[in-house]
Every structure is written in structure tokens, then in C-alpha cells.
Image 1 (tube, rainbow, N blue to C red):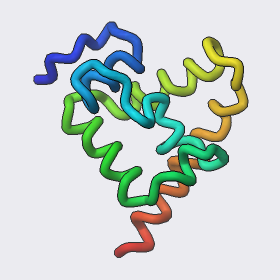
Image 2: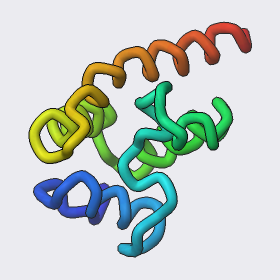
Image 3: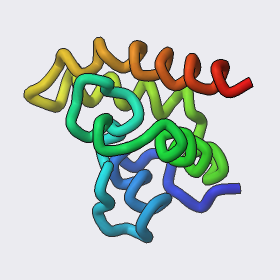
Image 4: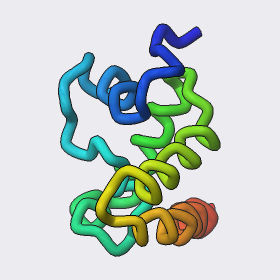
Amino acid sequence: MNSTNKKAHLHERLDNIFNNGSMWQHRTLRTVFDPFSSEWNDTDMDNKISILQKIIHSGENLEKVFEEYKLYYRNESTKPYVADDAYKGLLMITQSLLNKK
């Protein structure tokens, strides 16, 4: 079982997963979920998939992470439109995985 505090803010939990509590390069997950961001463009599909796998292997529920990501952008950020792009990013990753088979 994951020792990460499930009640902690998403970004704090991601920090713990990726860098033992310190801020990591793609802290907001725009790398994975926002195909219209510079963060997305800075990371190839294999790296995006690797990020998602690490989240899953940490014991996090990916659906919950995805929902918290969208809620963060809708409610806490100055970029609420980012939440709407999240599904597009997930579809692009899925398509990439399907094309590999």
C-alpha cells in the first residue's frame, strides 16, 4: 500500500511520488493531460506513459488523479480551460498505445 497521504493536495502527492517531496518538472500533469501546453510538447508519448505508470504503481487511483487535476484547473487556477482539454490528452495517449499494437 502506498504511504502517500490520500487527503493531501494532488500536487503534494505527486511531489512525493516523483521526487520525495520536492517539486518536479511536470508537477501539474499538463505533460500528460494538456495537449495544447508547452509541457506536453516537451515530453514524448513514452515519457507520458511512464509518468502514468509511475502514478499507478505508487498506489494512486488514476481516475481520482484525473478528476482532481480537472477540479484544480476549474477551481484553483487561472486557466480553467485546461480542464476541458484533459480528455483530449487522454485520448491521444490511448490512440498512441493502440497504434503500437
